[in-house]
Length: 296
Image (cartoon, rainbow, N blue to C red; front, side, top):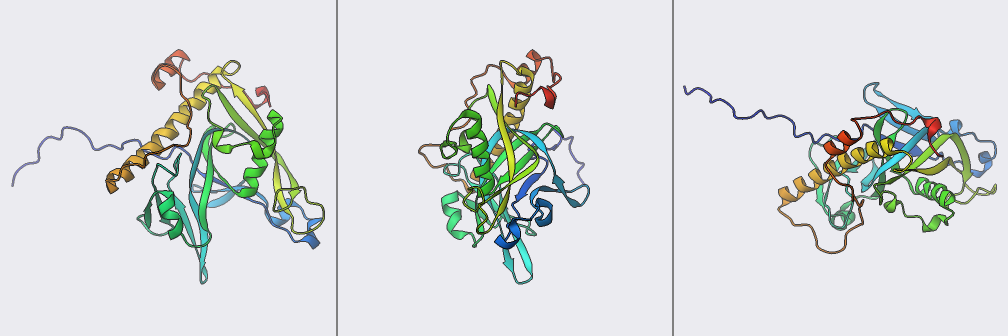
């Protein structure tokens, strides 16, 4: 029997691990009119929560300060099949028009569909649809989280940002939150809620009511918080590398070129040097500001 040859390299991981540690979901606690006046958020389980794999249970996020480092899109939803529920989710992309996605159903090892969003949309069952996801740096845990946006939560974030920059909420585009590498938008939630209608207006005592989080929005800039901006840019780079690697893998498997045409604007990175050089200039990972030092 022939002996094995000496390997020339070790088959180590490519490092393409998902940068964010968990997905944060929001439940608005839809409440009927008759109970809405006296209802409390905890009575209808309204709030933010995520599944903690290590603890094997769902945990609540009672407050947070997040900084948005990427605005991504995908497909997600839940369908009912008899007594069971099927969860659908996809890989995430920056631009659904030019970047393909793989769609998975919980419990199945391989993707059930792969392609561009325009191809996938008509194939999805009712209840499985387009979703927007903000990848955020959590100042408390010092890690990335993926914040899944519902329609109501998206409108609430638009209102908070509109208030911060004195702009009508309907003029705010969440796809443009990460246009600058010198300024990052932050969101703060302190555990308080307000009552809204399904359309996002203040609840006036009539019809169904939805609890929505009271959010405050603001920015940190390179001129005042260079260490934090450098840290956030490194996280943004990591997310971009991860998403790009997923897209390239799908394209290679399909041997399909990306469609030509306009692309969703992405972060304009006009900063010199590599990540290693930026870290060297900033002295590695300097101490970041505390929550009390943030400008919002």
